[in-house]
Image 1 (cartoon, one colour):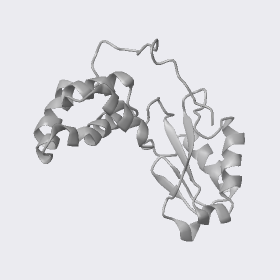
Image 2 (cartoon, helix red, strand yellow; image 1 turned 45 degrees about the vertical axis):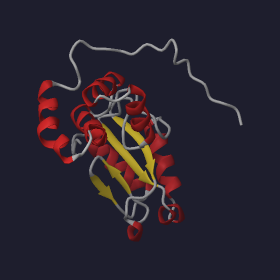
Image 3 (cartoon, one colour; image 1 turned 90 degrees about the horizontal axis):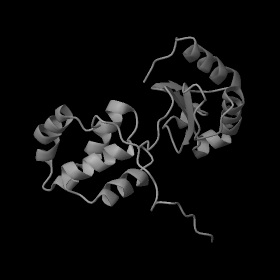
Length: 181
């Protein structure tokens, strides 16, 4: 197996002047989240969630700020954020399309649904459209096996999907008829 390497030694972290972990966020985390845990490290996941909820993703600068806030090594924060698929380490589109790829959806043809989306938007799974409007991912299960194939667009569940139905749903979101997450 070949090793995948990255140039970490010379990597530059984009930084902005304002912190991601604002004073207001720190105050909320200190008063509401930290008391729930015996050690500060226990609040790592809620801190990552707070940043992602506010900004839609977790920038590297924010991970460094969380590490300082929780008195953790930065590598621990970065390892944790990169381990869990729910954390976005790069910006995602304004609208998130999530196609279920569980066994039920696989049997019912989720591949056709994913391919229709890829063709319409000109992106692959894991990519974002050039205009920043849509990001496409596949998930392991949406818990809608009885109505497979299924997909989420933002927070709206689409069940018993056909290629026509998913393309229509995307058009509705483009026209402003879909919910923004």
